[in-house]
Image (cartoon, rainbow, N blue to C red):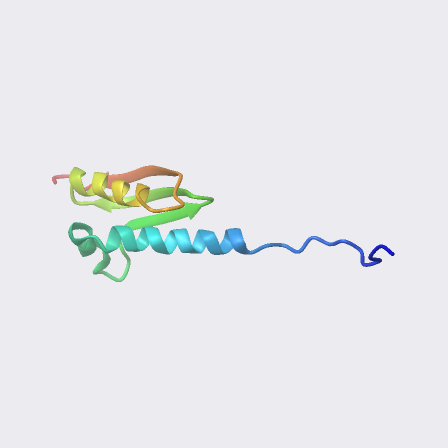
Length: 94
């Protein structure tokens, strides 16, 4: 006899958890790297990391072009990250 229980779709939070994990991994990859760790010293870090569906956007201000490029490289190296939009600006006079 077939199961009389109506079929239901239970929403999965896996993608949400993956997004949180990607965000934390990206945060650790950038701020845990020696040359970039100084950006995590203040109460509001100047590098803002936005992760949505494996796509990372970096926004904010860094001291120089090397830090800008390194942040993008570190973010791009995180497992689960598909693309990086590097919108970081370099401080004027640096």
